[in-house]
Length: 72
Image (cartoon, rainbow, N blue to C red; front, side, top):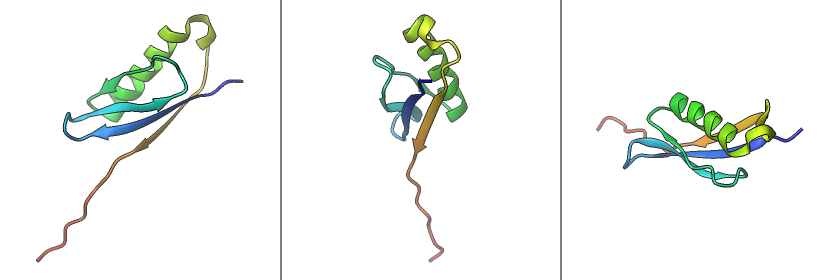
């Protein structure tokens, strides 16, 4: 069974989640929230793969950067 791998990243400047890389050719979506992004990925994979996407598992690997600030 094929698994689609999608690496996601948060574009802080644009304020959206984006596809950083994917093994699904032509996949490029974004979403305001991570949940929106995942819904958009699922719909786009179905559109791009057509009949091949019948119940294909999609693994989304996400990362973001944070900063912890301490009190002065």
